[in-house]
Amino acid sequence: MDSKFVDAVKAGAPAVGIPDFKWLMAVMDFETGGTFDPSIQNKGNKATGLIQAVGSVAAWLLGYKQQKDGSYLKADREAALERFRLMSREEQLEKMVWPYFRFWGKRIPGEQYRNIVDVAIAVFLPAFLGKPMDFPVIKPGDPEYEKRNAGAEAYRLNKGLDRTGKGYITVADYAGPVIARARKNFGYTTLDPVELVKAIKRAKSLDDLLTVTKQAQADNPLLAERWQRTVDSLTKVRTQYPGQSLDQVIKTSDIDWRTWLENTVRGAYQYSRSFEPGVKEFVRDVVVKTAVDAGKVVATVGENVVGQIGIISTIAPWAIGGVGLYALYKYVMIPARAVQAGIGQISSGESDESED
Image 1: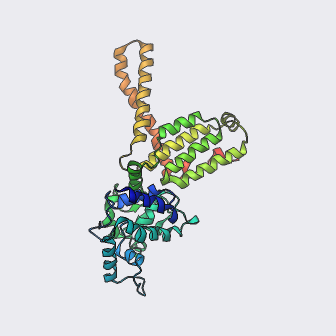
Image 2: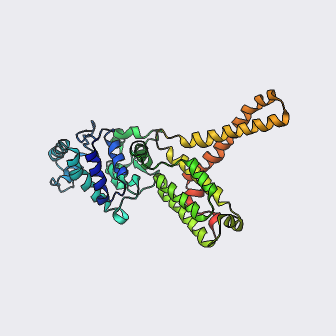
Image 3: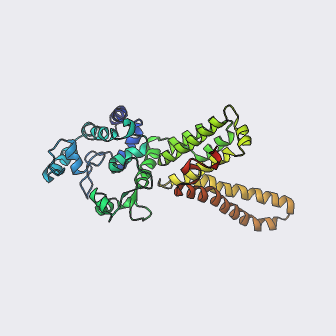
């Protein structure tokens, strides 16, 4: 990919309400299969170009006459797609990408895309901008979805996104792979949840916890709105205990806010990154490492106490396995379920801990 094109994207994105050009680069990367080929076409519906515009969208962008029922003549749709197919990348930016995002950006509060998920869904199915991550955007057999061209045919064309075989496609199913490409190919912010937990342990004030939370919010766009509720909760607590150190707040409120936020981070990363193909940092670095390290401690202590290597070599594997299962249950299953169910630390953002 030439630097001229990248510079054009970097310069033009803010003007259409996209604050980080990497968001758009990742979407175009995904839509073109990593080629950024402006002439690329979908074999099924002939969607064309950098953001895979379908015939009706292409005709609209190029100003073809709309019929009374809002549709476009087949000949006009085909002609529009062919015109886009013959354009260069830079030409498509000017005639396809910028007008498209400018139009949909005006329908977002503040006329600015809030995160990479907004940019992704604006291309995929803009009618569902702002919907929760588990919201179905393609649902075969549902009359309302069929009316929006988001039913059976849309599912057939995008079935590969339904990696778990649910029978429908959600916001996260599409946005997850886009975020994975953003991380891998464009240096999109990638925070290690283990490092976030370490920062939480070092925190001396509620401001420190808020800083970590806002970092995680920026890095976790699949849960941006739920992270905001966590920010709101910590802000409320800070208002209740002005000027106090974190240790003082914990003592006064009788709530361990460090542990609360640690569990929030663990659960959120496990949940959101399950939608990003190939991302296994959380399981590898937290669950496995915790199990192995704890097993080593058990083995060492046991060897000193019992003094029998043979006995320790027998019980150590069981100890490691037991600790591993406990860690998996406590730090993955419980927080993840809380997030999925819309309750608990991150999904509600409110708890008995933050009430007056």
